[in-house]
Image (cartoon, rainbow, N blue to C red; front, side):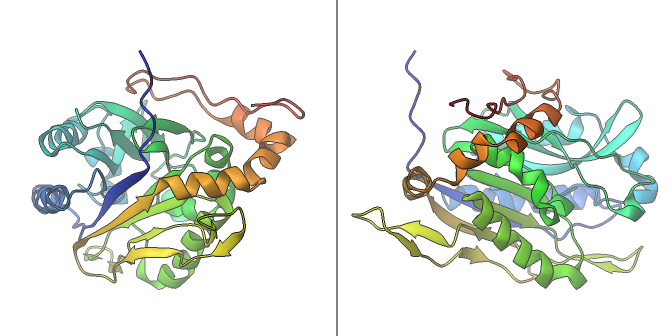
Length: 310
């Protein structure tokens, strides 16, 4: 069977959802309405925030977390199939007595194609959540997609495995706090630039009234600020932000020009140079095995040793 070439363009929709604690049914109903809106707008890949159904709800995290697959991922699978979209979302996952803030990627038939557990856990979360090293890129009709979650975006090291593995679209469900909105926005811009990739930052908005916390919103579709000329291999600058929101509940949609991204990456030496160094190999070795629920799971990405071609 001949493999289908990745799409030259893709339309994406990021759902900025007001995520309420202890109001799961209401969160799911509003998420469903916004998913339908994104699908009606022609979005092929739709992203929901971190812990979109439950909020993080740390004191009750063991109670509200679920296995993957489980009821929330079943709900996601049904919507992916109903709307005919690839769907990524953040969920609280319970596994082996631990709780992870995870992201799942489902295809347009509802199959789970990747599960990623947030690597970096904030100090106060560490009593409730467990981190795990496991970022990888997977093939989709749009190209290579990699997942991360929320707080990870502040740590460039987490994304370098995705960079070495050829990720073209980095999907980041998030539920971060409003006081950090501007620093996080700068970090999202930096992650797109240093990884020569699109970053889809789908953030929660609203408030955790029980804890007196306000979520930041600021959902954004971001790309590298570097591009290449249409009829040359000369580099030029481009506006990095394709679309963004403030704090309202909405869908943020944008067109990704993946053909132009690949032209720029082919012309730039960054990825080849990084794969040639020993750090790329070390990161690949640190990556955990794929989640057992992933359909057609591939082994962890292999980064070539120094001097090895890929």
